[in-house]
Amino acid sequence: MNYEFLHPDRVMVGARGVVGNRLFLLQVREGRRLLVVKVEKQQLAAVAEWIGAVLDDLGRPGHLPDDLTLEAEYEPDFTVGEITLALHTELGVVEMVLGGVEEDDEATVHLSREWAGALAIAVTRLVEAGRPPCPLCGGPLDPRGHDCPRTNGHRAPLR
Image 1 (tube, helix red, strand yellow):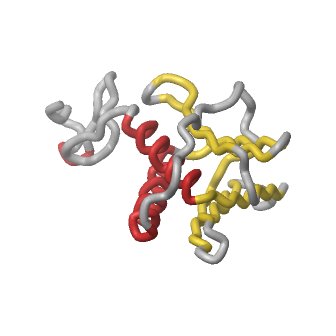
Image 2 (cartoon, one colour):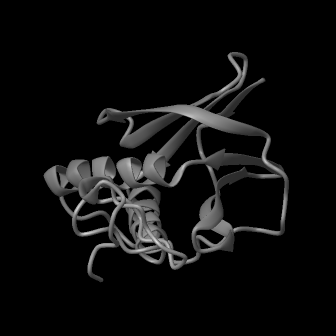
């Protein structure tokens, strides 16, 4: 199914579950329409990094929305497999195309500079609230232990 949100009213991001076993969700609302997609933490982090770099070049956006918390619990419409980002300076938007794992699932979302900036900040906070990275391999440190590939799994790295 194809979705198109050219003037979204809200963009929300969040996670369900406990650290180390979280389900990351992105929601987009335009009027009565709501899209909920499942995304990977690394995908969100890459989106935030790209948006941050683009907005640095464009200059500071106006007032940033401050409430990007998820709406009530909804099941995802699809799982995102690929995210494509583009800056459309003539429209003043960041275009985010969310390609589903299934071929026929796709959503196009136009984000104003303000929504894009707010999304980048919210994603960064969400990602940083998770497990800290291993100082040796960069993988997440699990409270139950960490078999670090850099140590061949023989010892846990120092925390």
